[in-house]
Length: 291
Image (cartoon, rainbow, N blue to C red):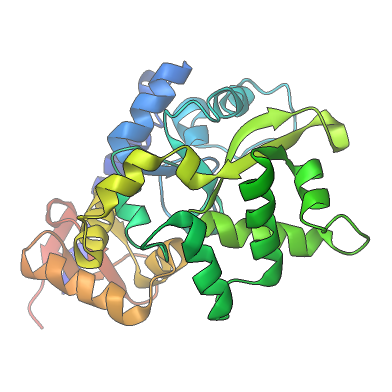
């Protein structure tokens, strides 16, 4: 069995995560460049899932503190100031967590979404088929009618401002974001702590991604996304990929098989300190033992 060299992996991730002091980013422009280099990243690190994050690239590999005065929280300002500017996609997609996706990679993710025709009609088809909840439909239609709204106004417009409706509203936002139908485009001073997102419909801001996605097959999209992921992390296990992408098992395994066949990665790699085996880039292998 091929065996992962943990030291090589750590050195590899230091480079791709920009975690050493000499590699860290210091400006919004460098943040955009980092997302473009990696293709997609988390905003903050997520336990149990390997992926570069804006936090680590700016502040180093350390926990995110509660102290709002920590210099690493400049990442929050970068994120907020770039909402709606068309520099990247920001939303809750990967592992249902906050992430950034580069404009180059966005069409590949959109190609895997439930959208296939006109955005103003696709959502109704999903609602009729029972795959889009009523709350998500109401949120979508509120934005369709009113244009961009902050979360407070959006809850009211979608009739989800009553007692006990907050969780249903948040679930609707998650459903629409993961389907690339809704996107944060700004910040409002409304709401608790005078801070809330302004939301709008995805197709009003990323029409180029929609147009580019039309010639991308699901197979091509998954191969591109998984290759980009593996180039960022070097090695991973099946469980991490499932949590990150939420692809069905057959589609994920088929994509892995294609990458193994073209020798882009090795499968069934022993990973020190981890149960089971995983995928690994060939240059991170320590030894290959005959069985």
